[in-house]
Length: 217
Image 1 (tube, rainbow, N blue to C red):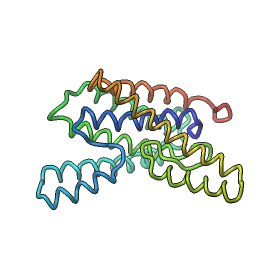
Image 2: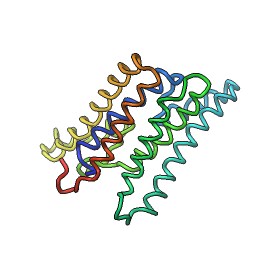
Image 3: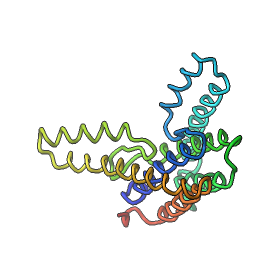
């Protein structure tokens, strides 16, 4: 079920939604992917803006920590018969995002963005495929490259599987964009509390992961 279109589609919507949320009401930061933070780190070093340097280092460090924790959870709970290790990750993400939705904006935005980076790292490490194709639910660059590569393969070789794979990648990108649109619209209305929507979706994913893989859509 973790590789189904339904689960990965919902997680892609969450990825786009969180980008809109952190950008619009948590200090203009894209907390999901770290390329921007790494580039900004260099800019702040040149400008001598050491507080901002610390901010970017914190974001990057939290992303790294999220990857490490996800792999640790997998190694310890992979054989668990009670809950799948991916359910533990999704449940933790849902709870953290839910807590963030009640933390006031302003001075605590850095902490909230760091927490979002942390859980998004866990999500992208935990859920890597849709129907056997490698994708990332919290960023689009890799999917755009891979999808376009598959499109070229289809145009050159008329390979139907390549076209199918291309559509998988582009669909995930489209759902990410939908998440951004929805996130921007709801954040403009509910401000910090808009993150509750993401928490609810993640609880839904947690429930969906109880469905056996052979019944996955």
